[in-house]
Length: 119
Image (cartoon, rainbow, N blue to C red; front, side, top):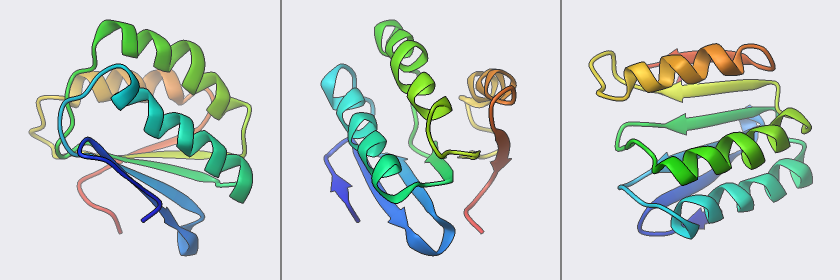
């Protein structure tokens, strides 16, 4: 484990050349953005190729955080070593529509996969 708060945990999965971002509970503002900013540094340092988000305990983001995600974080990923984005999500997740929308948008830049668990 590399980063851990009450809201989010980041792990570097060396064997997969991936970062696993596990959301624990609802958060906003810096509690939401700081883990992603930290992850950006790790992506550069280790030339990470896969971003994995575990949405099991996920939540709908605040509008301002979604805007930040689209304007700041996603462009930083596009201009990085990331090639693949994986969402861990249950078929009956209340976030499925939101994640499907993100899948469509991200498919332009990355290989995107939705799965129920990490292989």
